[in-house]
Image 1 (cartoon, rainbow, N blue to C red):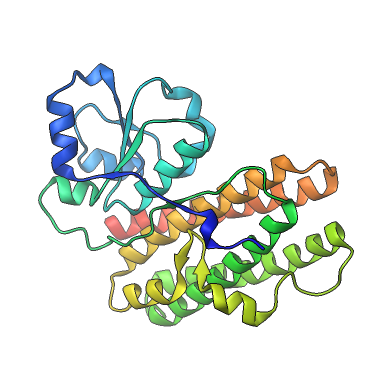
Image 2 (spheres, rainbow, N blue to C red):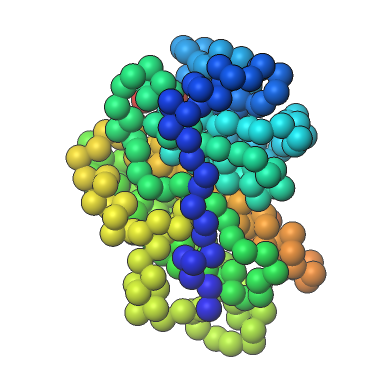
Length: 276
């Protein structure tokens, strides 16, 4: 059965390591990738950096030179950790996330910092195993968004989190039906006890730890983490959907991927509003 051991830790450098690396090399020898939104980039960015917002990264991989080492950064390091994962899953070999992001570069404390830098998973897994993994992650995301809807009930972000919680519940229904179609079995892929035992949500991080981290955080920090979560979910459904031979099942997974992309776009819009 699939579990969080399928996730791998993201390669990370400190701001000091990045500065030293840049000082010792010519700009054309490496790629410095900013995965924030254009509005954030306009307000300030690292010299020589290329802007590709995280939500567009999958579609714009061909703009990057795979032969060059890449350093990825964002506001606090959370989105960049997932951007690093996207590159690694796409076959880029030498990629690092800049810990603390642009905030740390400018000497500020990155309040969004969390050990959420996890990237996807071993190859050649059984599609049913991935469905079980997705079931665990969707349940974790549903709980997380429900709690955040309560935490930010008086803010604009609250209604967004509430709608995302409902969407994750819908995704679980879709996964249950797909699981039945692939296995011929009725019911949920996993029991509630099995799901709870994994204590995992999108991104491969502990739901318990994330909820503790989010307590008292500003909405912008939680929105940034949510963006990273949705990139993971998008990545998962693309990967599994493309691996399936049955066209109907493939279409279902790729449809879920597009729904996660819509969630990602909504979260990015909310993140930009918080930055204003």
